[in-house]
Amino acid sequence: MTANLNINYRSPIPLGSTVLIESTLDKEEGKKKFILCSVTSTDGSRLHTEATALFVSISVSHLLRG
Ligand SMILES: CCCCCCCCCCCCCCCC(=O)SCCNC(=O)CCNC(=O)[C@H](O)C(C)(C)COP(=O)(O)OP(=O)(O)OC[C@H]1O[C@@H](n2cnc3c(N)ncnc32)[C@H](O)[C@@H]1OP(=O)(O)O
Image (cartoon, rainbow, N blue to C red):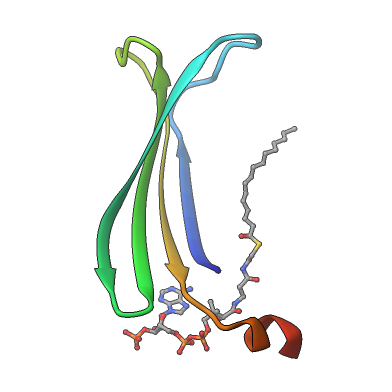
């Protein structure tokens, strides 16, 4: 489950262009997974977006509780 999501938009993505999205597991602490993500041009020369996220593992009952 997404607990935190930070997105920095560094440069516009031209309509119709193809981009490279890379996502990596930065670190894991128990139920917490810290993810890094970047969106670049396919040759990697232009950074469009970078993001960090924290995902927390949950049980199905967590969802049902609302
Ligand atoms: C025209 C253009 C169209 C474009 C189109 C495309 C749009 C593209 C947009 C994409 C955008 C995607 C958007 C995704 C959208 C959803 O992902 S929807 C889901 C949103 N998330 C939710 O609703 C989660 C709501 N929150 C919860 O349910 C609960 O707070 C959580 C996250 C499950 C955590 O609750 P819990 O399991 O009871 O855990 P809890 O004991 O509170 O915390 C566990 C640990 O995590 C830590 N923690 C919890 N929350 C946080 C936090 N926020 N920060 C830091 N630490 C935290 C705690 O400190 C704790 O740490 P430790 O003490 O264990 O070291």
